[in-house]
Length: 354
Image (cartoon, rainbow, N blue to C red; front, side, top):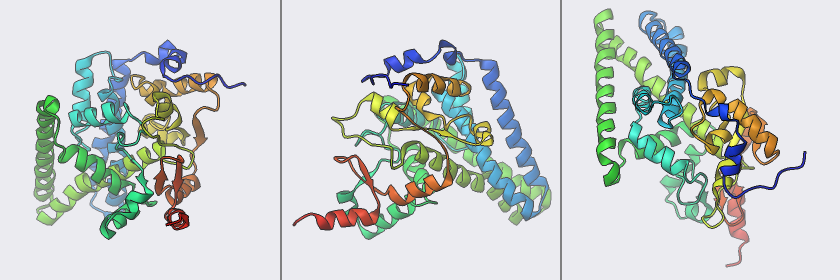
């Protein structure tokens, strides 16, 4: 198939997506919500009442993945993709983001407006924004160490929880226009976290007559799933927007087409991943139009691929590809549009005449 001439905007791409991909079913969406919340509750019950470490540790890890799935439903509700009702979207997003301790209105500001509005644009998109070679070399030893940890094979959770959750959720100082709504949701999340701690710690202590058991149950129901969630979501965002073939753009070179079509991915994942994470790895159509419900993303991707064959990164996910990205994609040259490993960047600097 001959590739269609590529447009500068996304309007033509959106026009190629079948209208039925925009049909939102509140009933269907709430069915997914009920499924995920019920699964979360069952796993929590098993953690509380089956006090064997070899059972509880895997269950606590599993709960982290379930929290990730619940969060993705909240993320879609925050995009207005869950229902035609603005009220249902708003309330569902606020509730579904509580297990992951995310401030809904902060998320809308940072994710919907900034990340989706300026995907992969230098100085704007803050999610996994590359560090330039010269900026890395100017860092202190401690910051260089932090960068090496966060951009390592296992560092996605540390990056996400610091850069996105802590900096953009917990300690974020909102613009005046957004301050009231964000602080309202901030206090909602803080109240939930306090109540969750009291209930889980108190329940465990009372049921088993042991403060230590109460503490362990709080860790297994709250802390461990939260950390696993951060690792999973941080990794998911990384593979969407970082890779040797994924380019980030200088301001003058960036367009919505380049950001949303060329700087994200369609990753073909095992069926179980799509079941738990609601097709979030079919990411290009989500960036082309975030109003598309998650259950229509596969069909929207087919339509985009049919018209713009070869224009997007579409591949089967392979662990070795992620390992290669984690090894290669450390620093970035925006002029060249190229990722460098630390060693390559150092050789590049040394080769420049003084």
